[in-house]
Length: 248
Image (cartoon, rainbow, N blue to C red; front, top):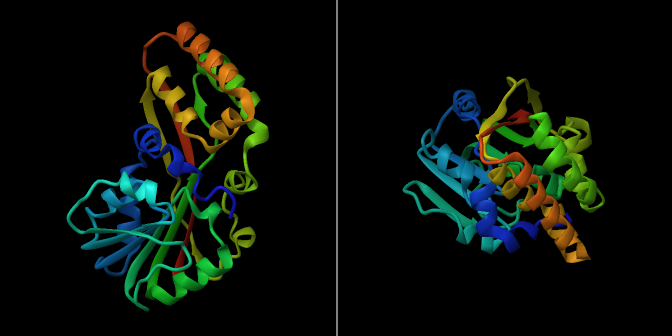
């Protein structure tokens, strides 16, 4: 799908600016798995989810189509990183106990990806993908920073991003497996305005807007917003949409 390798062009910034996901989510995935020998983390980026999954699974295979992103992933015992598209993992058939996708499912060729999931999963394996919607934060941060930046960035969001914001509806995603209910999860953060601005700069739409000539204006909005907000920590919440299933 479009923009699937956009993040590699800002791989180092992406690795440092993107928030982690709640520990409760990973505990739920581990609890839903019928065994914990091997998990396939798809669209791993710089390995953020893979690192945490390694605490609960004996082995993690973490794949991403973007070599620049994989190059940013920290080496860790029990994790094997591999450059590969989501629909061609290189894994043997029927070998994984869980498949995870952290904020990446909207970029995939879904029909081919579901086929690959069905091929590599053991009977009863758990599938879990998640994504977050737009930022929830304090009103002054939204007024001084988020809203003015989003006003420029909105036309540059891809249809894949907009699919993500709609919440991974099973029908829209063409999910062929038995959907299972998951609890509500959210990234709850305490960040400085400068960290929030760094998060915005990691968005694919930000890069596209800069390439289209809006870099100076975006930089001006950021500088003015940071000057107005100061250095104190602020609330930032990213509610997660979870799509989970049992692979027959």
